[in-house]
Length: 172
Image 1 (tube, helix red, strand yellow):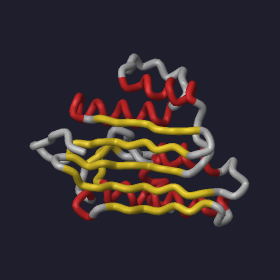
Image 2: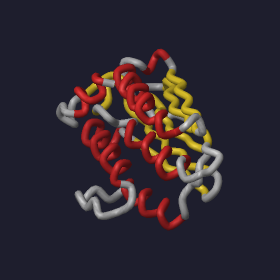
Image 3: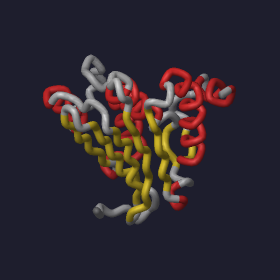
Image 4: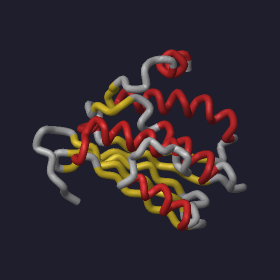
């Protein structure tokens, strides 16, 4: 936990490997578990080939925090969130998926507008997502892609497609 605090005071534009980011996520979860009372299960499924992927520090934590705070904590029976990363041709598919409350279509639409709107206007829903998207877009420009899916009562999934080598291609 001390490591998480130490890291949180460093520059936000610092790059870390996915392996390091997962360590910070686990430290965050140690702190968060005190409040969760075992009603929320967190699964971490990372393809070993993805561990050396470099990403801006705290690229996953805001997405996990959104899933916990907005999707799962308000549910009486809790739920489950899964963080996964799989290697694809020239990129990593990083996903944070929960079976929580989901979000109304108007909120989903506002956040999806981040796909084309990067004016620096953070007066919209999804500031944590906005920060992650902006930092990854800055790092990878048009080679970075993302999608967000959500339905009320069925949960939310955010998927990031992050280039992982020089031969980046779009593939499913």
